[in-house]
Image (tube, rainbow, N blue to C red):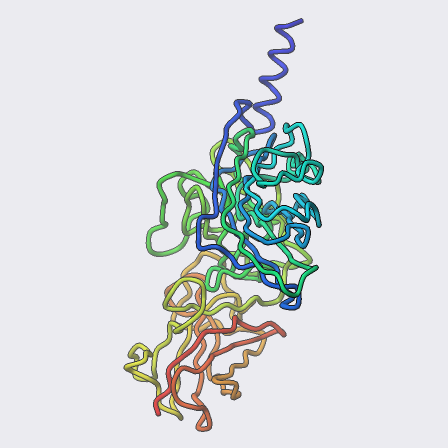
Length: 406
C-alpha cells in the first residue's frame, strides 16, 4: 500500500507541473517611509513589494513597521498580485503608537486581542494569512495598504514591510491576463489583430534569452511555442520572464485564449479580451511616456534639439492598429510595395489639436510595426506636445510627446 501511495504522489506531482519540495522566498519594501496622512486627505498609503519567485503558497507571514500616534485610526490590508486580500488590522488597539510586528497564523494570539504596549512581537492578523493559499501564485507585486479614516489631526509613517512566503515551486509557465501587454507602451487589458504582445511571467522559457534573427519570425524559439485560440503564433523573443509574440491578423473576439508551452511544461490557457484595435506608440524610454520615437519630415530624429516645423510631417511608430489591406500574415516581413494600410481609419492629435494623417499602416521591413505620418498643425504650440493616435474608438497612451519648433 505504501508503495502505491508513493507512486500516486509521484504521478500527481508530474501531472500538476509542481515540485513537491517546499521553497521559501523573502521580499521587502525598503524605500523611504511612506506618509500616513490625516483622514481629510482621503488617501491610502501603499507599499509595493515585488516577489520574484513563483510559488503555490502554503504559508505567508508579514512583518510590518508603522509609526503612528493612535493605531485604532488605521485599517491595514495586504493584497496578493491576483487581488486576494487579508485584513491585518481594522481600528484596533487605540493605545498602541507603533506596530513593529510579524503577522503569522501560527502565533498564539491576535494583535487586536493582545494590543501590546510596544507594538512588538508575533501575532495573528484579524483575518488568516492562509487566505493567500487559494491565490494563483506568489509571483508579482504585492500591496500593503494603510488607511487613516478616523482622525483629521493625526499622521504617521509606514516604514517597511517584509513578506516571507513558503510553498511549492511552479515549474510550469505561469502568467495572468494582466501580464499580457502591448509591447509598445506596456499597457494591459486587451489584444488586437496583428498586435505584438509581450507576455510577462515565470518559467515561460529559457534562462538565457533567445532573439529571433532578422526576417520572418519563427513559430518555435528557444524551445517555446505559443498558441492563441489553438493556433501557433510567431515569436520574436523568448526568456524565462518575457515572451514577445504577434497576434494573428484574423483574430476575432470576444477573447484570445493564450497558452505557452516550454519543453514538456504547458501553461493554463489564459483569456484576454479582443478589440478591433489596441494602439500603443513607442517612446525613447521604456514604459511609453516622454519623448516619442519619431522622425521629422527630413528623416532626422525628432528631439529637443531637433524639433519639427509646423506644416511638416512627423512619423511615429507603434503597434495595435488592427487589420490591414492588403492583408498581412503575422510574423512575416511587410513589403515596401504594396503598402498595407490600416482598415479602420486612424486619427491623430498633437498638443490636443487634431492633426491630419496621410498614412497609417505597416512599416516595411519589420513584422508587426505600424507607422503613422502626421501633419503638424499650424496652430499647435511649441515645445513638447502630446501626440495621440486612435482608431476603432481606441486611443494610444497619454504622456507621449513630440518636439515642435518655436
